[in-house]
Length: 304
Image 1: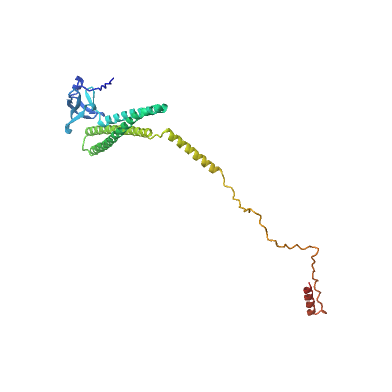
Image 2: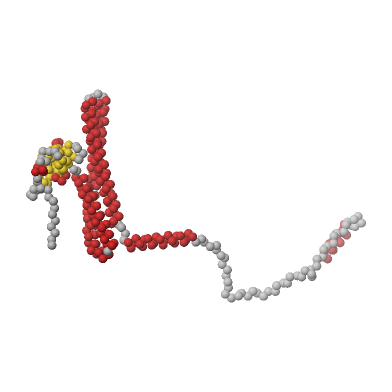
Protein backbone atom coordinates (compact mmCIF):
# COMPACT_ATOMS: atom_id res chain seq x y z
CA UNK A 1 0.00 0.00 0.00
CA UNK A 2 1.56 3.27 -1.11
CA UNK A 3 1.09 6.57 0.69
CA UNK A 4 0.30 9.59 -1.46
CA UNK A 5 1.43 12.92 -0.05
CA UNK A 6 -0.77 15.86 -1.04
CA UNK A 7 0.68 19.36 -0.77
CA UNK A 8 -1.29 22.57 -0.90
CA UNK A 9 -0.62 24.69 -3.99
CA UNK A 10 -1.55 28.34 -4.34
CA UNK A 11 -3.55 28.71 -7.54
CA UNK A 12 -4.63 31.95 -9.16
CA UNK A 13 -8.07 32.95 -7.87
CA UNK A 14 -10.30 35.98 -8.27
CA UNK A 15 -9.09 37.30 -4.90
CA UNK A 16 -5.49 36.99 -6.06
CA UNK A 17 -6.29 38.88 -9.24
CA UNK A 18 -7.86 41.67 -7.18
CA UNK A 19 -4.52 42.50 -5.49
CA UNK A 20 -3.36 44.10 -8.71
CA UNK A 21 -3.42 47.87 -8.36
CA UNK A 22 -3.56 47.84 -4.52
CA UNK A 23 -1.14 49.68 -2.30
CA UNK A 24 1.53 47.72 -0.48
CA UNK A 25 2.66 48.54 3.06
CA UNK A 26 5.03 46.82 5.41
CA UNK A 27 4.03 45.32 8.75
CA UNK A 28 4.52 48.65 10.49
CA UNK A 29 2.35 50.70 8.15
CA UNK A 30 5.06 52.25 5.95
CA UNK A 31 4.04 52.69 2.32
CA UNK A 32 6.15 50.64 -0.10
CA UNK A 33 4.48 50.87 -3.53
CA UNK A 34 1.69 49.48 -5.69
CA UNK A 35 1.05 46.02 -7.13
CA UNK A 36 1.62 46.02 -10.89
CA UNK A 37 1.14 42.35 -11.82
CA UNK A 38 1.92 38.72 -11.01
CA UNK A 39 4.05 35.91 -12.45
CA UNK A 40 2.47 32.44 -12.43
CA UNK A 41 3.68 28.90 -13.04
CA UNK A 42 2.26 26.38 -15.56
CA UNK A 43 -0.12 24.99 -12.94
CA UNK A 44 -1.54 28.46 -12.28
CA UNK A 45 0.17 29.03 -8.94
CA UNK A 46 1.58 32.51 -8.27
CA UNK A 47 5.34 32.65 -7.99
CA UNK A 48 6.01 36.36 -7.47
CA UNK A 49 4.29 39.72 -7.47
CA UNK A 50 5.64 42.83 -9.19
CA UNK A 51 5.51 45.99 -7.02
CA UNK A 52 6.30 49.50 -8.24
CA UNK A 53 8.45 50.97 -5.45
CA UNK A 54 8.93 54.40 -7.01
CA UNK A 55 12.58 55.47 -7.04
CA UNK A 56 13.66 51.91 -6.13
CA UNK A 57 12.09 50.61 -9.33
CA UNK A 58 10.03 47.50 -9.94
CA UNK A 59 10.59 44.85 -7.27
CA UNK A 60 9.72 41.15 -7.60
CA UNK A 61 8.38 39.92 -4.25
CA UNK A 62 7.63 36.29 -3.41
CA UNK A 63 3.92 35.69 -3.14
CA UNK A 64 4.29 34.03 0.29
CA UNK A 65 5.54 37.35 1.65
CA UNK A 66 2.28 39.16 0.86
CA UNK A 67 -0.97 39.11 2.80
CA UNK A 68 -4.14 40.84 1.58
CA UNK A 69 -6.02 42.80 4.25
CA UNK A 70 -8.94 44.67 2.73
CA UNK A 71 -7.72 47.27 0.31
CA UNK A 72 -4.09 46.99 1.43
CA UNK A 73 -1.47 44.34 0.75
CA UNK A 74 0.85 43.73 3.73
CA UNK A 75 4.48 42.89 3.03
CA UNK A 76 6.18 40.45 5.43
CA UNK A 77 10.01 40.56 5.45
CA UNK A 78 11.77 37.39 4.42
CA UNK A 79 13.87 37.20 7.59
CA UNK A 80 10.68 36.93 9.60
CA UNK A 81 9.29 34.06 7.51
CA UNK A 82 12.62 32.19 7.53
CA UNK A 83 13.11 32.59 11.27
CA UNK A 84 9.55 31.45 12.02
CA UNK A 85 10.02 28.41 9.80
CA UNK A 86 13.33 27.61 11.50
CA UNK A 87 11.87 27.90 15.00
CA UNK A 88 8.83 25.79 14.09
CA UNK A 89 10.88 22.99 12.51
CA UNK A 90 13.46 22.96 15.30
CA UNK A 91 10.80 22.79 18.02
CA UNK A 92 9.10 19.88 16.27
CA UNK A 93 12.39 18.01 15.79
CA UNK A 94 13.30 18.46 19.46
CA UNK A 95 9.92 17.20 20.61
CA UNK A 96 10.30 14.10 18.48
CA UNK A 97 13.81 13.47 19.78
CA UNK A 98 12.58 13.69 23.38
CA UNK A 99 9.74 11.30 22.61
CA UNK A 100 12.19 8.90 20.98
CA UNK A 101 14.48 8.96 24.02
CA UNK A 102 11.54 8.29 26.34
CA UNK A 103 10.41 5.33 24.23
CA UNK A 104 13.90 3.77 24.24
CA UNK A 105 14.28 4.30 28.00
CA UNK A 106 11.01 2.46 28.60
CA UNK A 107 11.73 -0.42 26.20
CA UNK A 108 15.32 -1.41 25.40
CA UNK A 109 14.16 -3.86 22.73
CA UNK A 110 13.28 -0.95 20.46
CA UNK A 111 16.77 0.55 20.66
CA UNK A 112 17.89 -0.92 17.34
CA UNK A 113 14.83 0.35 15.50
CA UNK A 114 15.08 3.76 17.14
CA UNK A 115 18.67 4.32 16.04
CA UNK A 116 17.60 4.74 12.41
CA UNK A 117 15.08 7.45 13.24
CA UNK A 118 17.52 9.01 15.69
CA UNK A 119 20.13 9.47 12.96
CA UNK A 120 17.47 11.01 10.73
CA UNK A 121 16.58 13.61 13.37
CA UNK A 122 20.23 14.34 14.06
CA UNK A 123 20.89 15.02 10.37
CA UNK A 124 17.84 17.29 10.36
CA UNK A 125 19.28 19.26 13.27
CA UNK A 126 22.58 19.63 11.39
CA UNK A 127 20.81 21.10 8.35
CA UNK A 128 18.79 23.39 10.62
CA UNK A 129 22.03 24.60 12.23
CA UNK A 130 23.31 25.67 8.81
CA UNK A 131 20.06 27.52 8.14
CA UNK A 132 20.27 29.11 11.57
CA UNK A 133 23.76 30.44 10.80
CA UNK A 134 22.49 32.09 7.63
CA UNK A 135 19.46 33.61 9.38
CA UNK A 136 21.65 35.03 12.13
CA UNK A 137 23.80 36.79 9.54
CA UNK A 138 20.68 38.24 7.90
CA UNK A 139 19.37 39.46 11.26
CA UNK A 140 22.64 41.17 12.09
CA UNK A 141 22.68 42.90 8.70
CA UNK A 142 19.11 44.06 9.21
CA UNK A 143 19.95 45.44 12.65
CA UNK A 144 22.76 47.46 11.08
CA UNK A 145 20.32 48.90 8.53
CA UNK A 146 17.82 49.77 11.26
CA UNK A 147 20.50 51.52 13.27
CA UNK A 148 21.35 53.71 10.27
CA UNK A 149 17.66 54.53 9.77
CA UNK A 150 17.26 55.43 13.44
CA UNK A 151 20.21 57.83 13.32
CA UNK A 152 18.90 59.45 10.13
CA UNK A 153 15.40 59.94 11.57
CA UNK A 154 16.77 61.51 14.74
CA UNK A 155 19.05 63.78 12.73
CA UNK A 156 16.13 64.98 10.57
CA UNK A 157 14.00 65.66 13.63
CA UNK A 158 16.77 67.57 15.41
CA UNK A 159 17.65 69.62 12.33
CA UNK A 160 13.98 70.53 11.85
CA UNK A 161 13.87 71.77 15.43
CA UNK A 162 16.93 73.96 14.81
CA UNK A 163 15.35 75.39 11.65
CA UNK A 164 12.13 76.07 13.52
CA UNK A 165 13.94 77.88 16.34
CA UNK A 166 15.84 80.00 13.81
CA UNK A 167 12.56 80.94 12.05
CA UNK A 168 13.57 79.17 8.85
CA UNK A 169 10.48 76.92 8.66
CA UNK A 170 6.90 77.39 9.81
CA UNK A 171 5.22 75.69 12.71
CA UNK A 172 3.16 73.47 10.38
CA UNK A 173 6.23 72.28 8.51
CA UNK A 174 8.00 71.50 11.76
CA UNK A 175 5.03 69.47 13.02
CA UNK A 176 4.91 67.52 9.77
CA UNK A 177 8.61 66.63 10.01
CA UNK A 178 8.21 65.75 13.65
CA UNK A 179 5.23 63.46 12.98
CA UNK A 180 6.94 61.63 10.10
CA UNK A 181 10.24 61.10 11.93
CA UNK A 182 8.43 59.92 15.06
CA UNK A 183 6.56 57.35 13.00
CA UNK A 184 9.81 56.10 11.45
CA UNK A 185 11.45 55.86 14.88
CA UNK A 186 8.51 53.84 16.21
CA UNK A 187 8.66 51.44 13.26
CA UNK A 188 12.41 50.95 13.66
CA UNK A 189 12.01 50.41 17.41
CA UNK A 190 9.32 47.76 16.91
CA UNK A 191 11.28 45.87 14.28
CA UNK A 192 14.45 45.98 16.40
CA UNK A 193 12.55 44.56 19.37
CA UNK A 194 11.07 41.81 17.20
CA UNK A 195 14.50 40.82 15.88
CA UNK A 196 15.84 40.70 19.44
CA UNK A 197 12.95 38.43 20.41
CA UNK A 198 13.64 36.10 17.47
CA UNK A 199 17.34 35.91 18.36
CA UNK A 200 16.48 35.05 21.95
CA UNK A 201 14.15 32.21 20.89
CA UNK A 202 16.80 30.82 18.54
CA UNK A 203 19.39 30.92 21.33
CA UNK A 204 17.06 29.06 23.71
CA UNK A 205 16.47 26.34 21.12
CA UNK A 206 20.21 26.05 20.55
CA UNK A 207 20.78 25.40 24.27
CA UNK A 208 18.03 22.82 24.26
CA UNK A 209 19.65 21.03 21.32
CA UNK A 210 22.98 20.91 23.18
CA UNK A 211 21.32 19.42 26.27
CA UNK A 212 19.67 16.65 24.26
CA UNK A 213 22.55 15.76 21.94
CA UNK A 214 25.24 15.97 24.65
CA UNK A 215 23.28 14.11 27.36
CA UNK A 216 25.40 11.27 28.86
CA UNK A 217 24.12 7.70 28.94
CA UNK A 218 22.67 6.27 32.18
CA UNK A 219 25.74 4.02 32.68
CA UNK A 220 28.05 6.99 32.51
CA UNK A 221 25.83 8.94 34.86
CA UNK A 222 25.75 6.07 37.39
CA UNK A 223 29.52 5.54 37.29
CA UNK A 224 30.15 9.26 37.68
CA UNK A 225 27.74 9.42 40.63
CA UNK A 226 29.40 6.44 42.40
CA UNK A 227 32.85 7.87 41.79
CA UNK A 228 31.88 11.18 43.32
CA UNK A 229 30.32 9.51 46.35
CA UNK A 230 33.44 7.36 46.92
CA UNK A 231 35.69 10.38 46.62
CA UNK A 232 33.63 12.33 49.14
CA UNK A 233 33.70 9.45 51.64
CA UNK A 234 37.46 9.13 51.33
CA UNK A 235 37.88 12.83 51.92
CA UNK A 236 35.69 12.65 55.03
CA UNK A 237 37.72 9.71 56.42
CA UNK A 238 40.98 11.52 55.82
CA UNK A 239 39.67 14.62 57.55
CA UNK A 240 38.33 12.76 60.63
CA UNK A 241 41.45 10.64 61.34
CA UNK A 242 44.04 12.66 63.27
CA UNK A 243 47.76 11.76 63.11
CA UNK A 244 49.09 9.82 66.13
CA UNK A 245 52.03 10.91 68.25
CA UNK A 246 55.23 9.26 67.00
CA UNK A 247 56.63 6.56 69.33
CA UNK A 248 60.37 6.10 69.74
CA UNK A 249 61.39 2.83 68.24
CA UNK A 250 63.12 0.42 70.61
CA UNK A 251 65.32 -2.32 69.26
CA UNK A 252 64.63 -5.67 70.88
CA UNK A 253 67.46 -8.10 70.19
CA UNK A 254 66.58 -11.59 69.19
CA UNK A 255 69.07 -13.06 71.70
CA UNK A 256 70.08 -11.70 75.10
CA UNK A 257 73.32 -9.77 75.10
CA UNK A 258 75.74 -10.76 77.81
CA UNK A 259 77.42 -7.90 79.58
CA UNK A 260 81.15 -8.15 80.30
CA UNK A 261 81.79 -9.57 83.76
CA UNK A 262 83.53 -6.77 85.54
CA UNK A 263 83.55 -6.64 89.31
CA UNK A 264 81.28 -4.02 90.70
CA UNK A 265 82.78 -2.32 93.74
CA UNK A 266 80.75 -2.75 96.86
CA UNK A 267 79.53 0.39 98.46
CA UNK A 268 81.32 1.36 101.69
CA UNK A 269 79.62 0.55 104.96
CA UNK A 270 78.70 3.59 106.97
CA UNK A 271 79.80 2.06 110.25
CA UNK A 272 83.34 1.50 108.96
CA UNK A 273 83.79 4.98 107.64
CA UNK A 274 85.25 7.31 110.23
CA UNK A 275 85.83 10.93 109.79
CA UNK A 276 88.50 12.70 111.72
CA UNK A 277 87.54 16.21 112.23
CA UNK A 278 90.49 18.55 112.70
CA UNK A 279 90.80 20.23 115.96
CA UNK A 280 90.41 23.91 115.91
CA UNK A 281 93.59 25.84 116.03
CA UNK A 282 94.72 27.00 119.38
CA UNK A 283 94.28 30.50 120.24
CA UNK A 284 97.33 32.48 119.49
CA UNK A 285 98.64 34.17 122.57
CA UNK A 286 101.53 36.31 123.26
CA UNK A 287 103.45 33.32 124.68
CA UNK A 288 102.86 31.24 121.56
CA UNK A 289 104.97 32.10 118.62
CA UNK A 290 103.52 32.31 115.17
CA UNK A 291 105.86 29.73 113.70
CA UNK A 292 104.98 27.09 116.34
CA UNK A 293 101.32 27.60 115.74
CA UNK A 294 101.73 27.13 112.03
CA UNK A 295 103.80 24.01 112.43
CA UNK A 296 101.31 22.40 114.76
CA UNK A 297 98.43 23.10 112.33
CA UNK A 298 100.31 21.64 109.40
CA UNK A 299 101.25 18.56 111.37
CA UNK A 300 97.67 17.88 112.30
CA UNK A 301 96.50 18.33 108.72
CA UNK A 302 99.11 15.87 107.44
CA UNK A 303 98.12 13.38 110.10
CA UNK A 304 94.53 13.59 109.02
